[in-house]
Amino acid sequence: MGEDPGRRRDEVAALRLGLDLGMTLIDTAEMYGDGAAETVVAEAIAGRRDEVFLVSKVLPQNATRRGIVAACEASLRRLRTDRLDLYLLHWPGSVPLAETLEGFEALMRAGKVRHFGVSNFDMAEMDALWSLPGGSATVTNQVLYNLSRRGIEWDLLPWCRSRGLPVMAYSPLEQGRVLGEGGLDAVARRHGVSQAQVALAWVLHQDGVVAIPKAADAGHLRENRAALDLRLSTEDMAALDRSFPPPAGPSELAIL
View 1: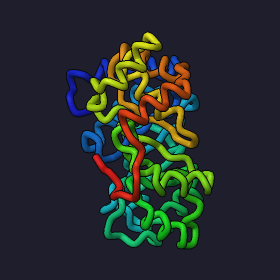
View 2: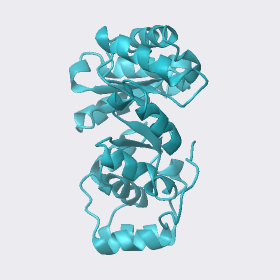
View 3: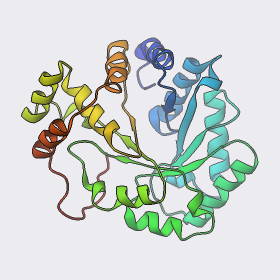
């Protein structure tokens, strides 16, 4: 969001409708639209900040001890708020994780960040993070996860579950590319819903997983919300496993 000024009104309206429908987690980042996405979010949550669980992300090159504080303050200005509920390192970079953790802790002491986490971290990187002082205070790992990208089920997802660490699944519809597969269509027809709703409901069915689909119009917002009420049966899940098999071994973390 925020990349096309002509869509700004619709994007703001979509975010506000999401809040009206009870979808109160909003995920953004300083990278999106070079900060413009955060200004769209600011407009959408004006007067409603306390309803929102607000998430933003810092670029790895900004994640030094001092740089992360400056980046967070810039995000707060664009978002027109005094705190983030969750602040994530967008992906691993060259800055030592210990230094980034010191920056996160400084932001928490200052009351500018309530929780911190990471994004696009694989198993080895999570192990390294967890071994550092303060690393186990990480509250989430945001990764690519959907029916066609199930590699994290082999090791990363069980690792997170064993530590009570929720996974945030970005691109839960693979930007629409999972749609059109026969097995997905059969389940959708059985329930009288769209394929997108089935794909999203499958992600929501996974224990300890939060889905963050992008939606910039009212129709998609309402469809996404309805997916929360869709209950997939054992038969449905088996059919989806046949069409989108779970991993048979470890694999590299997928990133979009």
